[in-house]
Length: 350
Ligand code: SAM
Ligand code: SF4
Image (tube, rainbow, N blue to C red; front, side, top):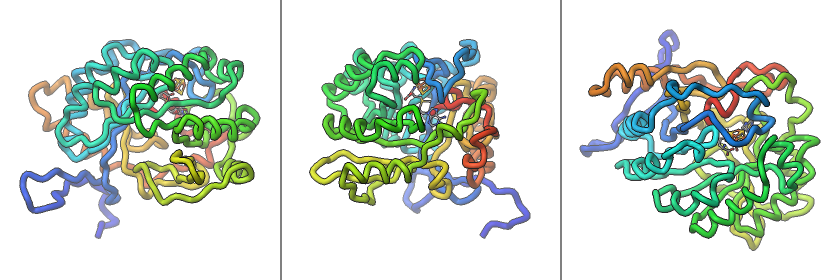
């Protein structure tokens, strides 16, 4: 039992007696941490309206971790018990030599899942090499199937290029490809059915995400906030949706359409808070470890990494200390008008 007068501490527990056994990383509230989301860059070839400001200033390159440093940190996390690694950004595929890193990450002993989130813009070129590198699954963001609307939401993007990228990912043999759709009232909420039709037709999974108040857009998000329950009710008028107990290890709740293998998920950080089962932490492109997306607490691991090139001990301790301060939960619902998290998603790594 935790003593209330002491601050929470992260622990490393050996789950079995057999040696050598993988360590189990636990935060200060007893949650097992097995999932690291690692951002390779804050840069992106799109400027999605909910994710970035129009005149985004990107980090100077010297502040961004070198790929060798990303690899060293990933290895440390895996040694500590992380079994799933998601590579993200910004747009991870605009990072030069990302494949070099991915090949090496795929070879890390103890890592069970290497997955990547992308906007799809570079997939025509990269889908096959990603599969060869050992990336097991892809999440591809897609908020609309209308070219003009796609341009408006991404400010730059070309829908047809992304659709060709999705086709390339299917052709490369990726299984369980998943679309991520941020739902926005008055912007794309009239397309939920078409997006599900597309997913069913292309044998893809799809997750609908409630917009999170990350970063200051200069206006509130309550006008565009669209809750999962409204989306579900709407989709149930068109599709027979059977609740599924499956989990992809993340916060999505899934439904299935009879006769199809596709899963329809809802990620509902506002309406169905999933913090009590949170198993993840985030590492930014500058090597800052954020134990919770919804809080501003973080530890800068990169200076430690550089100060101790031959000794992982101090960085390992910093990781444990950071997990000890992982908050019990976030409270996005009360921040739709005034975000408390000033970082955009592209900065923390989505
Ligand atoms: N560029 C890649 C992409 O778009 O898939 C990876 C990074 S992006 C930040 C990761 C995911 O975060 C995307 O699916 C995007 O839609 C989502 N995202 C960005 N800002 C968000 C916000 N404010 N609320 C909810 N999801 C957001
Ligand atoms: Fe770029 Fe992804 Fe953010 Fe869109 S959501 S601006 S594609 S990082």
